[in-house]
Length: 83
Image 1 (cartoon, rainbow, N blue to C red):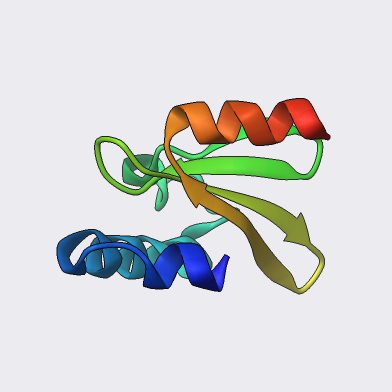
Image 2: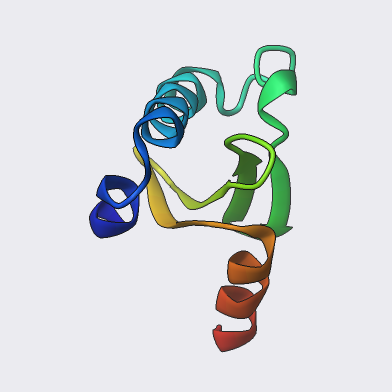
């Protein structure tokens, strides 16, 4: 995931970092995370929007949110097929 984040162009990098910070404080509080576009994909796997084309795929753990993938909608779908 770190390589995916560092490979992003400057503006996309900044936008993803902003969304990750928002996600950390708003997850589990539905009224606070409405703008993040969080969707539950599997029992412990979620997706949120990080711009028009980018998505952040993450798992919910008891004490943390674990980012699994940063990519496009198609990359998320491809990842889901491998599970």
